[in-house]
Image: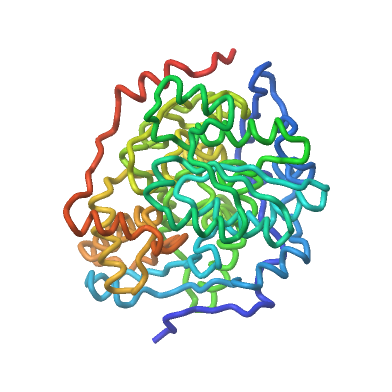
Length: 450
């Protein structure tokens, strides 16, 4: 019997990030300047030079600096775990493995890029970072990354999550961050939203606008993003590279890889290192992206040009989108409430290399509770979406008798999300239908691109 935990040594932590851009069968569409709508690199003053270079790099690998590796070793390598008890409960012949990023000090995968972004900003002389956060996992991670490199951290937290998840705020403040519910009165874009809707519950698009404006109006401040852009996905590929090594130790290779998508960094970090295999050897590998029915950008949004934020300060991106002014329902998976999706994931989906499914939050939490009761880990609401689909695929194997190998991206724990579990267990959790009318109104505001 193979071990339950498949571990690596510190010496086996990847020493470089994998960049998928040179391996794509077709190049990504360019970013467009938010004012001129002409092809552009990331407009200043958003990111330091090193991250701009990583965003557009055609180098297949990028070395991880020693200073970042030293911090990674606080929690990396993370375990790959065989879900024996879940397999038994499902009575499935499938082998289920989950790559567990919840062992990081911040409780999720987000720290992999937060440390890197803080390092590069510090190296180029900046004193302060401004960012947004949905469920609070990214804000927590950046607060910790900034603390390691002695940077100030300002977080605009989506208002509904600010009040749903108060202990995420406390965690950020413990690491020294200043946290503001968004939309706020602190920025012009926030005040504009509140003037139209004083009771606005906020969205990631609104919080991004506030953080971008904050960075643009302070000379010592840069903006930091926890998902969507290429350099963020790049930093997360340490996860997938480790998973490949760990599976090799037990002579396994996935037939199916499952993960949740909001902006896309968690799941892309797991599956991107497998893309060369899928493209070059034509492996029959299924990559399933899972999103909420309440915010189904990949499964129901058009593939078109849209702003990355509500105020139109960020670059225009070719992506599957529900419209940058769309404010999704108040689901508990706050990190999956972004109106768009990472351009790399959108591109791969358009090319038919990955697939996507949307699920409701009640069956998601049903699966999360089963996972907690068998494997002992209550998943965060975001990766619980992937747990649901992984279970569905394992049950399909039970029906067919196929002994498939399933790799699940378990990006973080749900210890700060117990209010959502409480509402599910009490029968108060609501399933939101796809808000078609709201999306249609938001799509009417798409930028006009020739």
